[in-house]
Length: 499
Figure 1 (cartoon, helix red, strand yellow):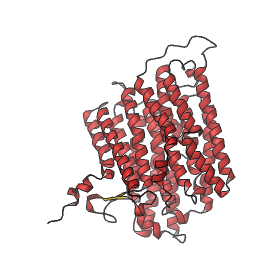
Figure 2 (tube, helix red, strand yellow):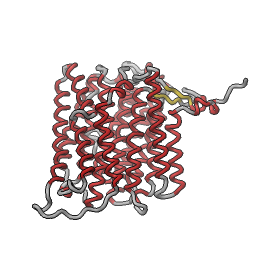
Figure 3 (cartoon, one colour):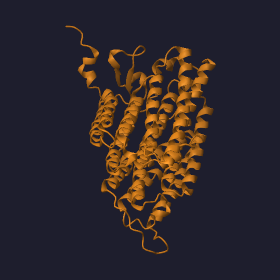
Figure 4 (cartoon, one colour):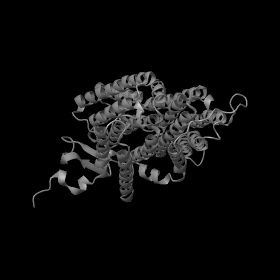
């Protein structure tokens, strides 16, 4: 029998990895063709199918005992068009990739329900939300299954440009200014990353992560050291780690609530994922212990500075944006602990905890702002009787950010502290505990204000009607961040203890 062409191979056509990349492009294009403000149902159906595909991929990996980290022996691989690396493009997924794919779809689906109720038919901010979100999700999914450094650059650019587009949507002066700053940072970060990729290709003639990993050694040429520095600096800028965080609060605070939730929960995690992938992969021989401690020091500064600015913030969404700066700091506390198997698991649990909780918190804030007409903490006075579900969602998300049991945030911080104490690194444990206490200050500041009566006992102003779906979507995300703490075993099994 003649050989079946690769593009007609049924198992290949049914590969979840392929459809997780293709499907968002399909419904994003459909939404674009339908016109401004259209495409919500296509997005909801597509995201529902994508969540099922991501869960199916993870379930298959667990059933085959293929959990762990490492693209070299990834449990799932696909050569696009039948042409694998180095001539073609390979897709691959290990436990880390599968976990990030699940988080992306699990956050995006409730936010799609939220956005469908949030944007009015004549709202210019929602005119192109659906196609841009589709391209953003496609870029994220492609990033998590890409295996070579140049394709990762392409996906980073797609994610960055789509993010800038949805921040600028609406055309307000604040949105455009924040989007331009975001665009500048995105281009600088991507440019530094691409220059590093070019230097690596000049040195080794390949951009495949699998091929580069055994080639790069401590005795590598200076060009390789320069390439690693450029790529990591570019990614740190995109991740908004202190002191590269200057662009994040304006972008996240000025965007609409669904956009803020997407950016904070997912987009900044993509560049961290790539940092972690490179740190434990090809760049491992080039990164001394001092580099790991520098990352932890910057993470500590992010926790302290971000928490301080959140405590002092006047506007509600800026408070939440600075909280993101602080919570990202925890992810970089793990780098001196990477010799401990639980360190990567702690980072992934923190990514999940923060992603779900921060999406829920921004969604809850959107409800409060829509109801009160004001984006200030002071404007929340007297809202507890009128917005109980939104405030409860905010409180649940706060439980996760503070690291209280039984939330996923508690598991993440517990694993960081346990790994730190196992190595005798008391400073990291103290920072993790202090960060939780600082988070409680700004969370309870918002909740306390909601219970106060405005103007020394005067009757509160009437609140605008808000669709119930907004509060329920926020509650679903925040509750998931807490309930994950009760069912985190499967996620830990998926990550495994691979190198």
